[in-house]
Image (cartoon, rainbow, N blue to C red):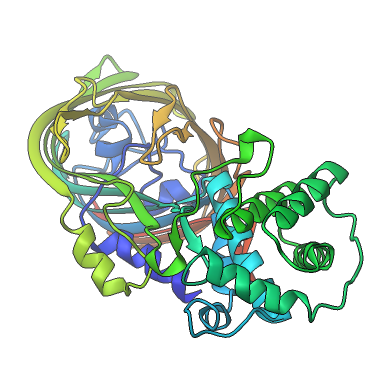
Length: 500
């Protein structure tokens, strides 16, 4: 778990990078599946739908009539592990690097069953990480906002950072050079007790590997291959194709030609594992927003709202090779991460509409970043934030019960290139005796399939003019690390608000 926590902390602390997807901020909203476009009733309407400000203080709208002043402070965070990253980190963390080091120098020991197994597992995990393209996304938010009747002002920080490994599959030789590695493997080969074929590889794959070992002059090559097949099959965390890709790397590390077919071939292995240039690729954008909000009623059942926002942005980008992670501790990586950002400022506009045809029904729609503000990129050029749009509905069949749902109308980009976000979510709130509010909900990213349903829950305490809310969300998908299961997506939110 330590490796995973270090990566999360690095992404959160090295720069103030903020998000592009429509985050479910606010404890009340997260508790109801991230719904807030039509159901929000406090200052966080600045974020979800500024048109709600047009209903504050209206005598004809019971739920809003006593709300002339409000102030809200909140904090939240979330983590999403994409495309098997958790399981791959778990597998990598269990590799015994001390055993591999025993054979990585000229004066090192020969291969043994244990070191042979660890070397093959390491190569197979590296190949699997390269194939899966897993990533970790960290979100964070904080705000302090206030309003008087239909005018509000706030300070918002919304954070999203994405990190993923960029693998160096050229420097993976285990031994000081090709001949040294072959010598140590040959010395080990004569000691192997042949376990026989394991039927893990296809016949074609088996024959390709055996032919390559023979071409390299490896002694007792059939036993060497059968032992490798036995260890990789027994490992149980990779497919036969992933194991074959690992053997392709192993053959190249010995100085052999890549195995067929060409689709699995990587650049030739040219160096030892001690020179590995595996690096952290990180992307983020930071938005410190100061919105000035106004909501205007239209008749008795409709309102429009507008945010004019000053934005200070920090765009962060570290590409392959910028931040190497082999043989470095977390402090060294953090120092390097802090070099790759650029700050700039701009303005943006949000607009919303709220329609309440009856006291029990509200319909809303909001558009954010409508002017597509641009900010400087550390590598030159500009980063443009594309507009976001979301619609929502809220039902109040009874005064103490709220049912709400939201859906993103746009497919929003995230800081993981190619990974999209388009959420649909909803939930219920039961306000017991107007003192204790219980909430439950669910949301799903319609744009991706790696994470299924995310379940949410929360509660609120109404203490006269003050309200304290907390909520959490966990995905149904589970990952494993250090033999422990945990959700692949999780969020928490807490806020304190005053309304009168």
